[in-house]
Length: 319
Image (cartoon, rainbow, N blue to C red; front, side, top):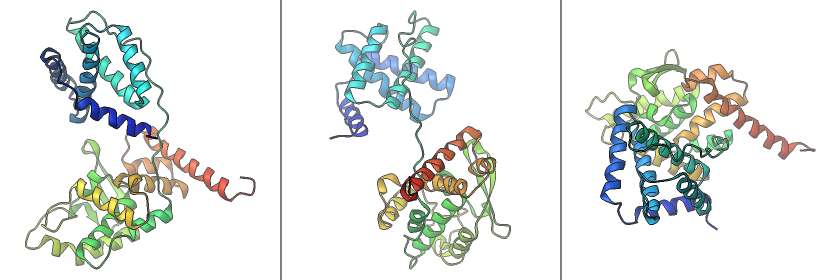
């Protein structure tokens, strides 16, 4: 039986293969996207999602001999009911509702429609999505997966140790240069989201592998070039996020882990969860992760708590 995620993916692919929209509806959607980008500075991913969601709703309205401008509240309710019956997730429907509200709010403001037909629809309730964290034994197996008989293997071991030891996002990892490191003081300067900088301490293990990589592997990867980046590929160029992603998937397979549930961010989740398991202060963890809000960091307390529950259930005589 197909999972909800598989069903949603299949439905999205089917939608993309449908006949194109009427020119008037397509122009309306593109005008909305352009205005939203100019007024709100929407990210490219968000604009792409809005375009897909509006096109799907417009196609459905066309089948009912209606249009985006003529949609009624009953149309919106019926469309969400159909999507739910078709297996779309609550998170997908929540994104769609956000898109429709943004679209119709704009149309009401510029006088193209008199009211928002999505205004009275309640947002779907989203369950708390907990990050998937590897156990300490699983992390050990993942970190030991690179073969150390090549410069790439040595680079990858140092890269994994640093990601786990400092809780880095993959974008932060590939953006590092040699000046970001202070091995004598054992700290790493990271430029995170929004250009914010933070200092994270380097553990002994990460420092050891970074020193080994800098001495034995990076000079060979750099060759005659003098690239500023820390982690380089065979051509002396910075590793990309995609290269790191594929490498970690490959190492997950070698370590006997489920590669579908392991990604670069998995090591960041493990970093946070393992620190909390060993008694780290939540505020200190917030600073190391570079979270602007403590509430974002607090989700890891739930991950740690769930891990303790499973440990208790597995090993306590009355668990």
